[in-house]
Length: 190
Ligand SMILES: Nc1nc2c(ncn2[C@@H]2O[C@H](COP(=O)(O)OP(=O)(O)OP(=O)(O)O)[C@@H](O)[C@H]2O)c(=O)[nH]1
Ligand SMILES: [Mg+2]
Image 1 (tube, protein in one colour):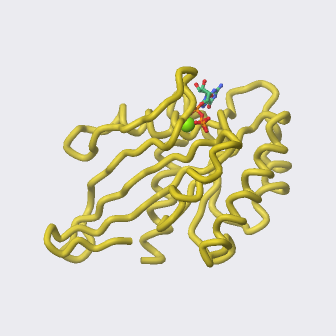
Image 2: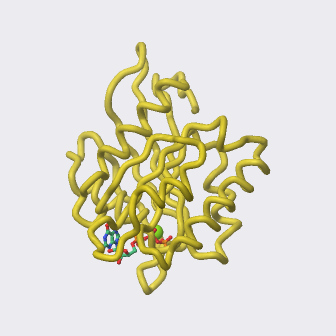
């Protein structure tokens, strides 16, 4: 959280974290496509030539009021590919909340678990811990016929019983529900 006294703004940082190709960028693209320019900035995406996130995506949302201040929500995605660990560390710095986007395909479960472990490790390096931090899980790609059952995904990933949502980010299903729930968590903790 950062308070800009001059502009009377409160800035919150929300980081979309998760395995490569899980759908983090797709979440931001959908949010961007649905909101009026008066409440959102431009979507800044730095991509490799095969459409993978290179450094991060960034989108600013501006709505609501807290006391006399205007909240600004800064949404970031991390690059999920393994070799971008240092970028992930930097982007996670100063986060107020995390959306963990899990991929529902059985073949991606190990990646989900590895990435959650990577997140916890980076949190600890920043003297934080997932059990005392606002975060939600999004089970994405629910449209795929071979997607895992929610029960088994919950059992594997949601050991801290955080809020969770099912989603098909590709067509927007669950995207705003996820965003709303992470903003609610931030507000409770602010
Ligand atoms: N079937 C299906 N495909 C999806 C869904 N969400 C995203 N995708 C696809 O999955 C691929 C990867 O999506 P991205 O949003 O680029 O994934 P990412 O998590 O940003 O990946 P990195 O930037 O490499 O970390 C793209 O081809 C998307 O169209 C979904 O809900 N269902
Ligand atoms: Mg991406």
